[in-house]
Amino acid sequence: MNHLTKICLTVLSVLFVTAVTAHAADPENGRKLARQCSVCHGKLGVARGDPEVPNLAGQSSLYLEKSLKDYRSGERQDRRMTLLAKNLSDDEIKDLSAWFESIMITVTEPE
Amino acid sequence: MNHLTKICLTVLSVLFVTAVTAHAADPENGRKLARQCSVCHGKLGVARGDPEVPNLAGQSSLYLEKSLKDYRSGERQDRRMTLLAKNLSDDEIKDLSAWFESIMITVTEPE
Image (cartoon, rainbow over all chains, first blue to last red; front, top):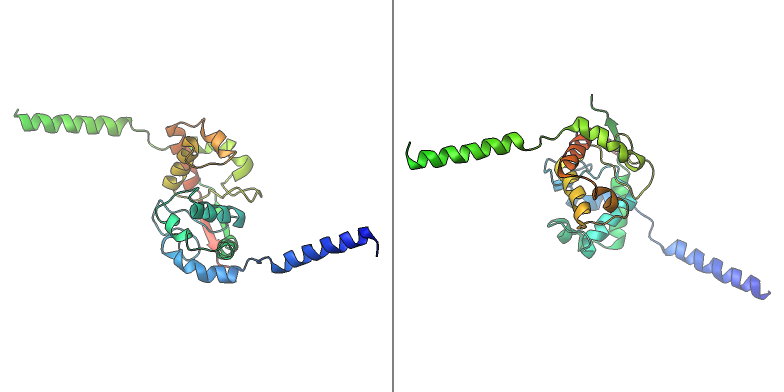
């Protein structure tokens, strides 16, 4: 085996291990975790009347992950979310975001 | 007219003038202003594919006003929104927020 082949095999091994061990988002677990969100954000990510609370249904998971991580780090501030996000792991944030992304929304143009 | 009556009348006058001169949100003007948002957020507030960009359709105007003002003040940071929000007046923020709030959304529960 020549030197280049060895390098290629090493790189491929690293990529394989990374792919296998990286947490794949689990929206079904996100659905369970989201029970704690439903008091404000609604069962399906549509806010339940508090005008300070955004809808989450159908938002991209990337946007939601960033929001939760920003609340967790203090980059973004909200009296409720700052407290709640503190207790979330990276994997839980991924699952929650995948769940809310999976809810389809349709819009109606105002007249 | 006694002193108390005079005070009452003064307070009522101030309240009346404030109510008349306060800007009432104009969603129709917001719809026009929102043309600059549609490149990323879509014509009806549904993001056009960039996963960093949230949907705005049906969000509460209070939430949207806070978001825009936070971007304008620097309290919240985003490379695009920080630039765009700088040029918005309070009235424009109110109108834009009223427009996006007026778009009805419906959600479908994932199976």
